[in-house]
Length: 172
Image (tube, rainbow, N blue to C red; front, side, top):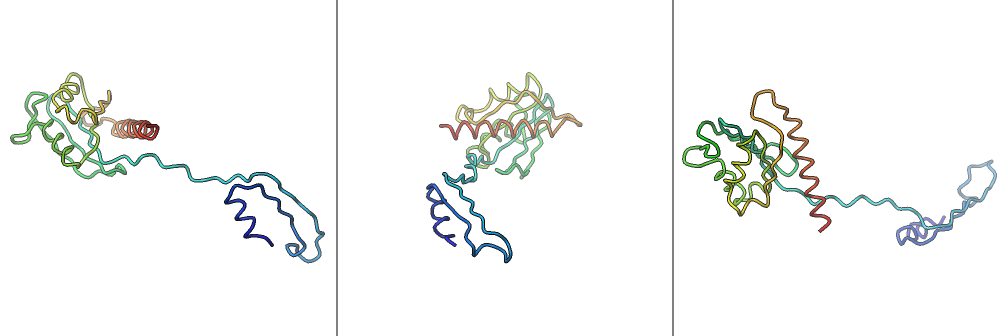
């Protein structure tokens, strides 16, 4: 058999001609000849999308904010809840939600910031973030901090936005 030469031809993308010889036959079967001539199709693994990094989902309302962080695979890594104050000046000790999120971004703990929640608090938080992080902020018009809110819907919207950003980064 010419296994190596066929493999080499397939690897090189060259036309292949192969014939079944008598050594391949089971005893008692007739010899037939089959030929394939053409460029073989070799399915390669698709190129993976640009690996998205860790991110935060910041859920806001009039009473406070939840800051949930996730690794690049979408596995939760931490959660901070901020209560009371007037939006967007919700505070944890001396720091506002915007300051906490900006520090996480600056420390490379997160690369993207997804902001969800109710109007007018969601855009107020985005406006209070420092300009240096705004390119990595994605405001999603869904979600809430209320009990029973659809976390699967938020997770799906975040993943869709991450996939879209990865495709855009890949095209550039």
